[in-house]
Length: 214
Image 1 (cartoon, helix red, strand yellow):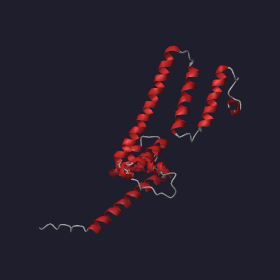
Image 2 (tube, one colour):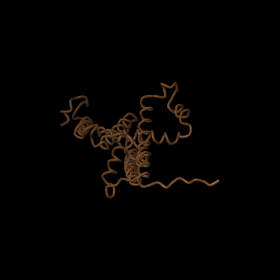
Image 3 (cartoon, one colour):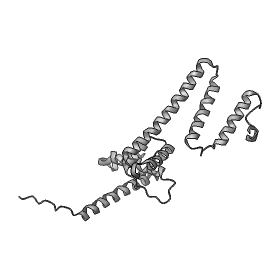
Image 4 (spheres, one colour):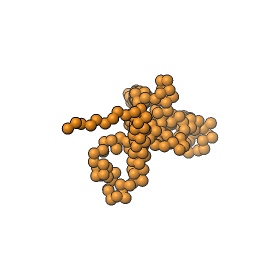
């Protein structure tokens, strides 16, 4: 029996096929995010999202999990853009961003767009940008640890004071990494000056108005 081979696609058919595949991928990501965020799994009687995926999408679990993570990341990094639909950014560009915090995801992707060679963002360039941000955070941690080690060698510090200091250091680093949007730089400096005045005996406590620190 002679095997009938399918006819070769024309360029127009190939382009239409690719467009349809892309539309389906975008719709999949949007629908998954909707099912997850609006707890569609609960409406179907499943105790959690994982059991819903296992029962309803047996053959495609890993793919759907990647698409959901991509959708959540894409929603986060495009939250400032109005009417921008989910599914526009390639999943391969979003995947390297998923381990980062929401704030770092936005910073990394914005930097990747701004520094993309020839204005073209690639998965490799996003990975490199993510690595730079992770290395910067690791460097900050090492600096703080070195400061702690140096101070521990010759300073007396109660556990209560050490915990408060570490919390303040983390808060300052987080505020700086957020470009001083969560806490503005002037307010942070005023509080620090107030603490210095308390330590030097110029002020009794830190519960007075910020104006006293100026």
